[in-house]
Image 1 (cartoon, rainbow, N blue to C red):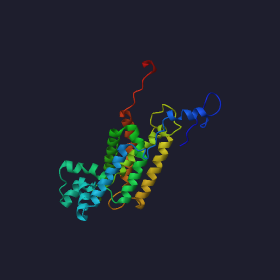
Image 2: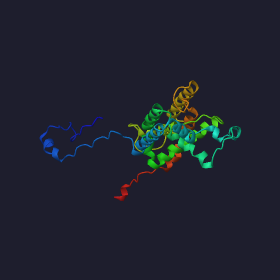
Image 3: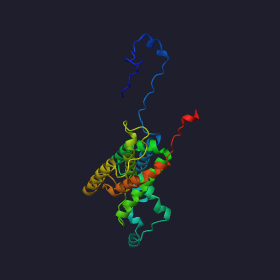
Image 4: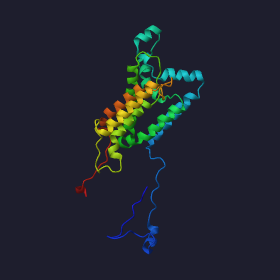
Length: 265
């Protein structure tokens, strides 16, 4: 980071070695140290929580670990009456069927799957968390993940393939972050606080790239997204679309600093 030198009067730069400067040096406070992690605490805690949940599952015996996936992963077949009737499976109570739409986000296939999601969360999460605040950030994360999961269930109806991972929720954060970028870049105009329109050039370009990459990885089988190793690209796109559409409403609800007018004295 560059520090801009201090001007004295109308001419020249202040000389650090001047007698006055040396004499007053003891009155100056040292510049604040920059934090190692600029991410808000809520993002760090969220990453830590995902890591703890993954460790808690993989440290279980193999049979118990598989049972956790079967119980808490999101399985489209669990919501198909035709599949349940043919397989003579009891889907459980309504809350047992609703719970996986949230709990699937806390499960990951392996360390690579967890690490990739955490890296993207660390890259895009702080932009959203700093603007929304911790409570709205977590609510936005969960809602995008739920909609991403619902998209996967709808497009894989009746399939007995579990989907796990927080990538659908993170895709929603990516969508919100790309709409916030005009207010984050250093050369943004002061007071420029509105989100970029969904059909703006930057959002459309990012969206086209994200859709193309996800469809390619989904068709070719590259990437991580479910217990079978196939990327759950439908969940990504569902979460991303939710992030695009819902970020405006959440931005309206975010806390704003109180600005005192000059007349207040």
